[in-house]
Amino acid sequence: MQLDIVPLNSWLPSAGLPLIIAGPCSAETECQVMETATGLAAIGGITVFRAGIWKPRTRPSTFEGVGKKGLKWLQRVKAETGLLITVEVASPLHVKQAIDHGIDILWIGARTSVSPFSVQEIAEALEGHDLPVMVKNPLNPDLKTWMGAIERLNQAGIKKLVAIHRGFSFFNRSPYRNAPMWEIPIELRSLCPDLPVIADPSHICGNRDLLLPVAQKALDLEMQGLMIETHINPSKALTDKHQQLTPGQLKELLSKLVYRQEAVPGEFQNRLESLRSEIDKLDEELMDILARRMDVVEEIGYYKKANRITILQLKRWNQLTLDRIEAGIRMGLSKEFILKLLETVHEESIQRQIDVMNRTE
Image (spheres, rainbow, N blue to C red):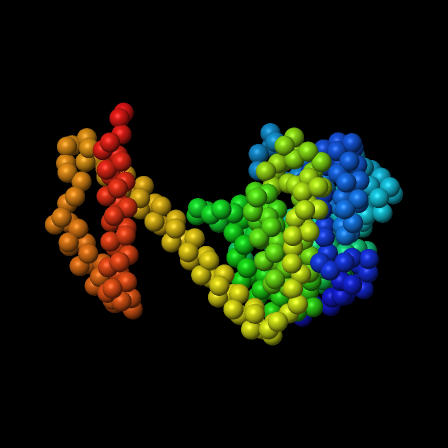
């Protein structure tokens, strides 16, 4: 992907490495915004204050942001703390209002970057403005759509671009709100090495307790910054309360991060991490399949209990073992491995059905 990109450190010289962007998911009140910003400014090392003004919510009955009036609160943040300010935009009107209020950096969210029509309208609204734009990956794991959004902005003359990796919707069971799928931002960096890529651990995790390892992994993969949601009182937040930190908690998290020197060639590390990421994804799918299998096992247990049938069906088990071993060998797995796996799964299945038999309704 050929892009005309201005290096991050040339237009954001005050930014440390990594670049840290922090602030609440949503600007809710002027007091909440100012208290959060003041707390972040006191930490040091925070360069950009973020806050959602227009919130693209799934349900119209939920909080959709304070709108234009919140931009004046951000102007006050910049004036009183010196932090740069950034907001999410999803339409040409948002772009105009943000520019009119002196917003330093815009970002395009995952719900917007998935739509070429919306991105094109925003790109056209930005023509003639030398304004930095950050682009979050789309909700679905589609690298071409992410690249397309970045290309549209670049073709409109936007050269100060940053990609934000915020994870991808993943409908199987996972500890994460959005699956990291690190191989996708790695491939983006490989295709466009001049494009800065930062991570949004808050939206990847969806849970503040998971933030540290994900933030660390992003840095280990040589991403150039982090966007972390921070709220003066997360438990009272109107949106995404579980993934936000207090300024004090953010300070603690940042103090625990390890900033490593590159020890191996980037190409080797990227390929290795891509393969590891594939294993992580397969393991998540495997855990989900096993969990669903045990759900069916329990349903069988209830059916046997209702019909007074014994748990162990030896003839069925012997035939199943032979069939699975034969199928596994055809797939390149060893007989010993398959047998051990089947015995472990069978032991857990028997215990699940015993538990069902012992339950009192």
